[in-house]
Image 1 (cartoon, rainbow, N blue to C red):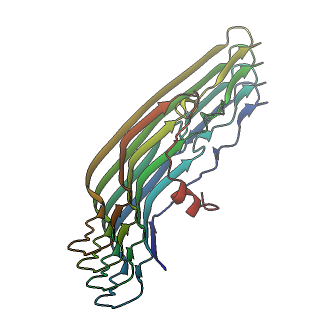
Image 2 (cartoon, rainbow, N blue to C red; image 1 turned 180 degrees about the horizontal axis):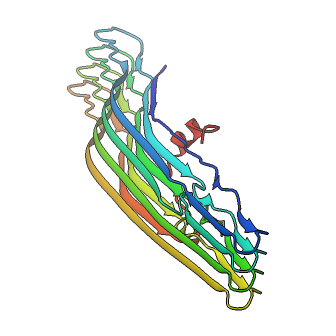
Image 3 (cartoon, one colour; image 1 turned 180 degrees about the vertical axis):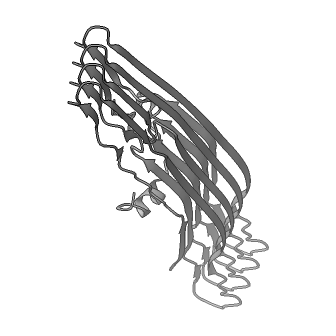
Length: 403
């Protein structure tokens, strides 16, 4: 007879906010074909602010008790004939998995494309001016990404498998056989929590910063042509994780404690099976990954001054300023209290009269594995290869189709 108890608990808690912004595109600015002596001015000003705020809080408590027991049989004080007492196997399997808290923000290309600025084909003595203060990730722009996770996970697991505790005592005549089966416990506790991934700009694109061109061409003699472009960009990134994991695991496998005492005549045999205890505890917490593509920080423009008339005055002023503020913080507290025990034996065959006595004990083994991994910060700027990897397989599968 075999008794098996298997308890599987899976708890997944998380929140995902995916913020994907298309490029903020401005039309081309063209000052063309105006007559002699004309006075033309264009003032262009745009402002853009992108704010992403993601917060997760997870509080999980798993209390699991799994017991499997067989045996406790008695065949005592019998007269004549053989006496056989046998108990089956006892097995307990416990699997506790907790996954949660994922933030993923993709500001795929919040950069404005200011378009092209063209001053061309205007007449002699004309005055042409373009002032452009353009926002996106280039221009007077602010991109703010705030991601926070807090996870508190407590696992209390008690797994017990017991077989044996059989008696065949004070029998007269015939053989007495007492045997218990195997006892096995298998406990697996896995916790994966807290991942922030932020991508600002497209690392595979050369045009995050707009890539517009400035062209002053073919204007008449004595014309005055001026282009002023000011780009100020600020990217503020804040990623924070806090994890507190407490695992208390008690795993016990016991077989034996059989008795065949005070039997008269005939042989007495007592055997206990094998006892095995396997315990695995794995904690994977706190990952921050951020990539700010360098093309998203400046306006990569092309400037052309060509074929303007005699005594023309042509001026281009382009100011690109960019600042990146990145803060990544981790706090992890991991407590693992693991006890794994395997016991076999404690058999007795005492004070028998006549016949042979045989006592056997099976094998016992106990295996413990505890793995902790946490607190990883990755930050990258530039169009270099970006590979942010955090093995939250169960969590990512849960959000398949959303991210």
